[in-house]
Amino acid sequence: MQSFFEMSSHNHYSPFLARIYDKVLHIPIRNIRRSVAEEIKNEGAIEVIDLCCGTGNQITYLREAGIVQAVGVDVSENMLHQAWRNGLKNVCLKMDASATTFDNDTFDAAIMSFSLHEMAADTAKGVFMESKRIVKPGGLLIVVDYCFDNHTRPLGRFAARAVEKFVGGDHYRNFKYFMAEDLLAKFSDGLSIREKRRFLFGAVGMWVYVNS
Ligand SMILES: C[S@@+](CC[C@H](N)C(=O)[O-])C[C@H]1O[C@@H](n2cnc3c(N)ncnc32)[C@H](O)[C@@H]1O
Image (cartoon, rainbow, N blue to C red; front, side, top):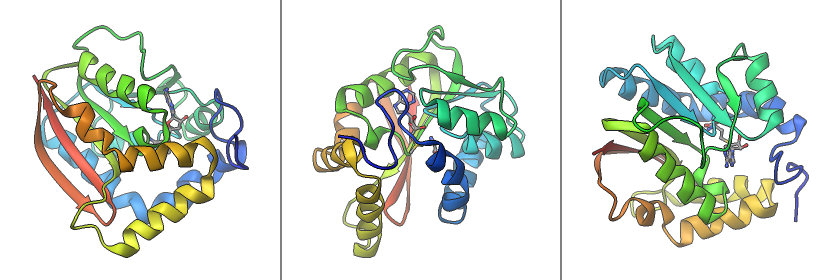
């Protein structure tokens, strides 16, 4: 079932939500955006892909940090139109992040930011596996998503759940499953990747994996 904010399975975000997305999230997530850009810059990554880039906001932060060869892919036309309005016309492309057309070992780093939790589990796993395929050995896979562990404050959990419930629909169901099943840990277990660092920003984690 779809909620007010969703449109269809192919156009996950309404024009309204796509338009307000960056404005609403700017203050809560700007430090996370900067940290992702800093991590990538410190590693000397040049070719970067933002899988499920949405409005391309993270790419704007990368560009400000001097990483100009970043591209993004997303399936939502409304989010992509907003990215294009944000000056990222030939940078953010319409493509399924779980089955991109990029060759193996193309990128120095891939970002999956605030996206895995909202997808059906198979799709989320497909996106994670795709990031491993298209990132070079030694490159980075960076995931930014909710992290509910012993360090997470109750208020952070409450706020995260409230936001996801507000969006509703399949998005909320997928979020609950993602968190309850600790899917990110399951995706990374047994893969030849190494968790290099993890940061916590309230109820949001930033995982930095190295591909091998
Ligand atoms: C919450 S938004 C996050 C956008 C952006 N990564 C950010 O950090 O703001 C999740 C995005 O994932 C996209 N998405 C969902 N499934 C996708 C898929 N299979 N391939 C590409 N994008 C997908 C949605 O269209 C949406 O733009």
